[in-house]
Length: 265
Image (cartoon, rainbow, N blue to C red; front, side, top):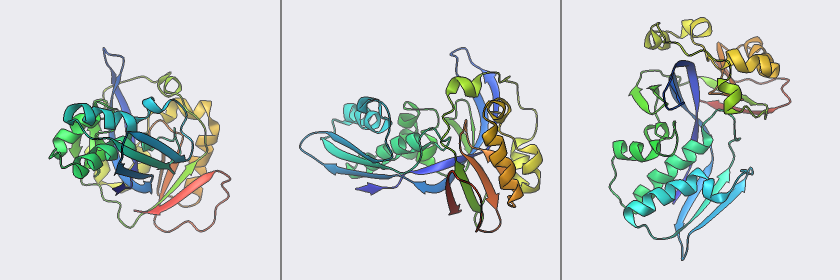
């Protein structure tokens, strides 16, 4: 069975509180975007995980796809399968590619073996694998809170918009992302801002930019270049390092030397 795990972009991201468990509570809008990996799961005599495409560092047993299979295998005594993940989405890009791969593994296994798990149940399993994994089960625009697992559907609609993503290949560590950030309650009308796109440029902000851009000025420059190209909104996604712009029309010329993706939403 084939699946095509997609990515997400963050529309605004605020760090609202540091928790007792050393995680942080966030406020953001997750929006699905059509840049995909390829996932294939087929019956096999023994479990096998094959990864092609962009190389994923680390041990196989640490891969979220393998962890997702193991999670359901223990619960439902699943038979062995061969999983092939062809990686096209850059790692460490703030696009949630690994989380999406894990979530799509859960949903594909649920369909393939007729486990009967409802969306809410799949979200519970996904949340055990990572903070934003549950989003990719729902896979529609949401306002997310907590670690990203507390979600409410929202009415943001970017159909007809051109999404231009610039992936410079910089690795932004979690420590760099959170270092120097000052969590504070969000006191504005977040959903009200989301409903009025004319406010996004000035009022919809990714708080991680405050600490990451001074350390990686290339990212700030990319954002400025996207506005110069005509984006009506530009921001870093997640903790980076992808910076994206939203355009009314397709971008036909640009001078970026980094990996870029352009998709119609």
